Length: 508
Image (tube, rainbow, N blue to C red; front, side, top):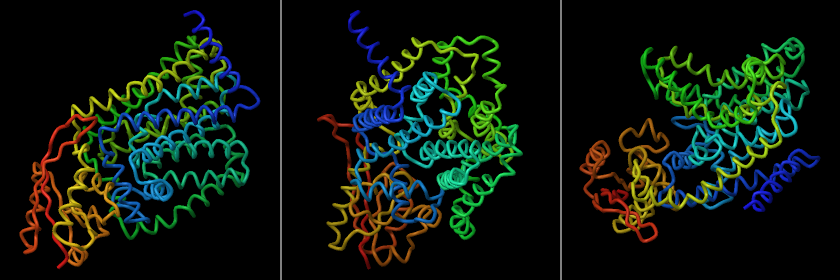
């Protein structure tokens, strides 16, 4: 036992030495590659008893239907999956690998920007602490407009910090591109840009920065990159309206949701914060210097970290909107710098070793437990029909082929079932949301449905979907109706069964 412990300690020491040595960049790339591999494998195994999340299917639908914008969010999340699946097969495993890759890119950006505030073993510990934040693993596996903020915010923060320090043309231009990319990922990124702007204004070097060309290059490049989407927005206001109207509340409920949002966000950071506290055992002076650093560069990091998390609370109350903690998913990149950068904090080598050991143990334990997670998910069942999307797609295809020899060009359904099942259809049909088609799927018209026909599917238990399906089927003399009961099989075990109604309306 003593020999094993000594061997593990020696291995950790060699890893830390490489991460702090002359070839630290190469070493961190190998570490992040391992992180990407382990968490990808976790996602593939743990989610093998379910289909992809409907948000992930929705992003793929957008990537086929609309490259300028979507009914809910700006288009970058769709662009990214379009690029990924143009190289890799449209399969669950490839989607999980892609999702974790984005989180891994964010960790590399965090490593790069941390060099401005941390050095030596503190920098290694800062990266290890970020690996304990669920934004970079568990939550990253559900790819959507929230998850896409993880790498975009990290890259924008890194580019801004480099530009602010150097005031050179290329970093300033890259900061503009990164800022525009963040906005094209989700409009929520406006809080990141505001936070970075305020951090620059509160720095003692603000005059030198704003008298240089750097901020104006950033603004000009960012505006130029955003201009096509802004033009599209003027002609398609539904996307921006969704951002403002999708979570309405009152002044009181908005204030309460703001409090829950802050508490929940802090909850995501509590494990690395506790680990950092126990590792450094800070004095009152160190705590004070961490809460409000005397060094202006470290204070810039604190403001750039804090404001994008706090500002949404004020915006929520002003607009009477409800917010949730998961929307802070992009805001962790500077956490390690905030927790460890104070010179009043001493981080013993033993504690660095333990932090790194914890960062390695968490994904290892997660990977070992992934079959259990899959089994529990299979036995418990999932909301939103998430265990049946693939089978629904197969059943719809069979029902359509029995009704006509024409290719299926349009899939009709409602809400999550539409996006989840469409992912598993090849070639992908166009989508038509049968309850609110103009709002949800404006790319498919009633004329398209009449010309090409449509296969509609609803859960038999969903009254909203069934009412829309029955109303459309009653108007067509050639409607072919099928009802199926589907239950997922996983490792020979039968899951919960659900009934679905399929109506095929062949082309006129």
